[in-house]
Length: 122
Image 1: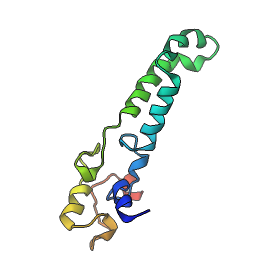
Image 2: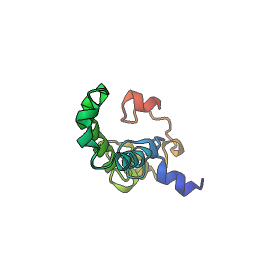
Image 3: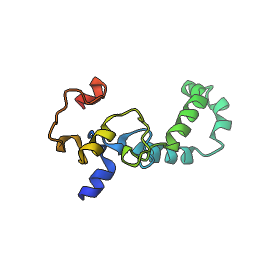
Image 4: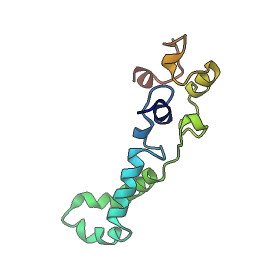
């Protein structure tokens, strides 16, 4: 993979944007669209009958709502000022430092990158 392709798909903090549930080019969006297409617009009409012998289908409406949310995709990436995690301080920091990724910064690793402990560990 070329460097520019890496920069496009990996966030400055190192998270893989393709795995993010909000990314417009992510796996979750792509697979959600595919699943919604496979179910088609009429599957919901059959759920009432099918749920009599498939109890999990009783929650189909909630599932479909979540599937449609995943299929939308709302984030282009923090590099394009369209980050779903708008409060993330990392995107501004790497711009100020003139680097593409945190690990390229002279101060890496930061004592306080401004992320949750869980994200910092990742």
